[in-house]
Length: 146
Image 1 (tube, rainbow, N blue to C red):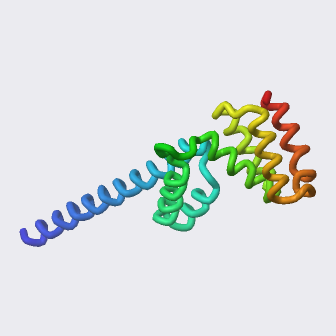
Image 2 (image 1 turned 120 degrees about the horizontal axis):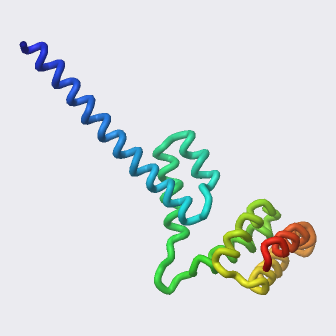
Image 3 (image 1 turned 135 degrees about the vertical axis):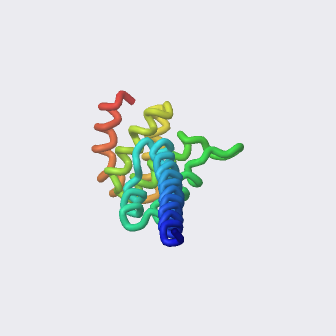
């Protein structure tokens, strides 16, 4: 009889551990999903970090949420995207700049705001970088209807 009771106790403990583990995964996945909601896509760094280790993925997702959170008297989402757009252009990260351009469309950025950001990128990184990134950006702007 005692053996049966011990066996049932182990089964219950296993169920409790499974429930806790599932709850943590749900919480982690929620944070990772919220990152997609904020950015419009699941950032590759979150994907890679999660593949390596779920806790690490959660930490990266929380970092994204903290950076992109709108705060009172802070930058709004359009302003933040204009900043990272200019940085991506200045670093010749055209692939990233093109993705950000799509987000800028969602946040109602004007063609002039984007051009101003491109000029800031040229100022910050040099005219050769401008020559390298502008043709692809201008083509995509036309495609997106800016």
